[in-house]
Each structure stands twice: as C-alpha cells, then as structure tokens.
Length: 297
Image 1: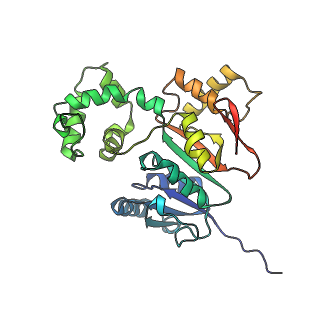
Image 2: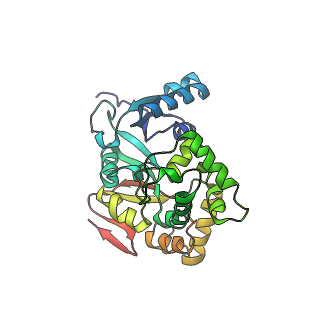
Image 3: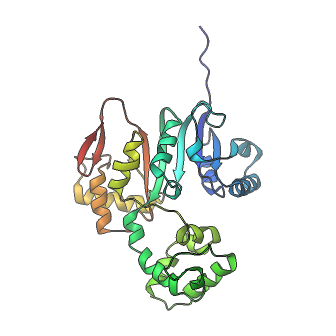
C-alpha cells in the first residue's frame, strides 16, 4: 500500500487588509501555510510590502497573496486547492453586501474538521455609541460638507479632512461624550482605521443571537468557542458569566442567550465585535443553544 502523504495545514485569511492579521496569525500558527486574500489589489500590495519588510525569508515564503472576492471562492479552484484547515475572517464579513452568503462560501472551503475564526460587529456595541458620534459628525466644522441635506455621505474624506476631524475631536473638553467615545477606539488614530470605524459605506451589525441563528446556522456551522482577543477582557467576561450563571450547566460557555443577556447589561463586554470559533454542523445533531433553546436541522 502507498504511504500516506502528509501536508502542511493551510490557513486562509479572508480579508487580509494591510497584513496585520496575517502577521499575527503567522506567529500563532507557526507550521502552517497561508493564503492572504483581499478584494483590493492595493491592500494586497501593501500587505505584501509590509510583511516582506518584517518577516524573514522563510516566514514570507509561507504566505501566498491573492486578489480575490470571498463570494467567488470555489471549491477545487487554484486558490482553494485541497481546502483550508482554518479560515480567519475578522472584521470583514459585516462589510459584505450578503454576509450570510459570504460565510457559506467560507464554510464551503473548509477541509473535514476545519474551523472558522470569525469576528463581526456587535449591534449592541455599535448602537451604544454610533448615534451620538454620527450626530456630531454631521455638524462638525471639519467634515460637515461631506454630507448632503438628508445627512447622507457624499464621498469619503481625504487624509487632510480626517486629520482635521481628529484635531476637532481632540480639542473638545475632557469629559465630552463624543471625545471620550472616540479616543476609546484605537482605529480613531489611523487613517485606515477611522475610515473603517466611521465612514465605511457598507456595514451590517448583529446581536449575538441574530448572528448565530442567521448567517452561522444558514452556513451549516455551529459555535465551538467564544473568544476575546484581549486576555484581560476574556478573563473579565468569563468571570461575569460564571458569577451570573455558574459553571455546571454550560462549562464551555457557549449559550448564546446568556452571552446576549450579559451584553445587554454591559454593551462593552465584547468590545466592537463578537468573536467565535465555528465548525461544520454534524449531519445528525443539533446546534448549541440559540436564544435559550436547542435549534436542530
């Protein structure tokens, strides 16, 4: 009999942007090969330049850079190849016109036993600050000309307009609500970050139950872990979960309804995004709790 062939695990970063996420994950998954995918040729070029400058030859050689659309990923294509053991899609799905279709595409390129690491905007978090901030933006001296009479954006701001807006916010009195809200976000201090935070033309936010019962379920996936990128936020959130619900009935802390209840009390619980590890649903079996009950296929 032929000897079984071994292959290196493959990771897809779906929406690689400027390459920061790729650099982080290269260190996390040290013995894997990566595909860095983005629909923007400019972003892919920037990611390639950045990573070439900070990685060694061996590290850089582990990454294949591809200009492409998540919605056009096809099983068996040159990019997908034998599939991916891990798909990382953080801060991207909510900017697609059809988030559920995008997640289904990502699920379709997983190898058997593969997983998706997903992060999407939290509706509760976004609604806790966006209305106050957007109201200020429409009257801010530095950028009010970017909006029409109905308050709709005419165009994206240029770099000099973003810098002027940032100066206007930082000049507000200490303790001002808008100032305190915006300086809380690290994205506020970079051009690309502030465009994503405040000026992105397409964005969909979900509550945790909406995300899991909607795009996650329709893609044939189920949560296997809730995670927080910041270790201190992770510890604090899990402590709050245990204090309110105990350990015995849900030791893996996967009950979406419980996390939703905690977030309603503390809109900053997840920061801006819900972060999940997902796997394909078994052919026979149900999902973890959604809205307090088990949903089955």
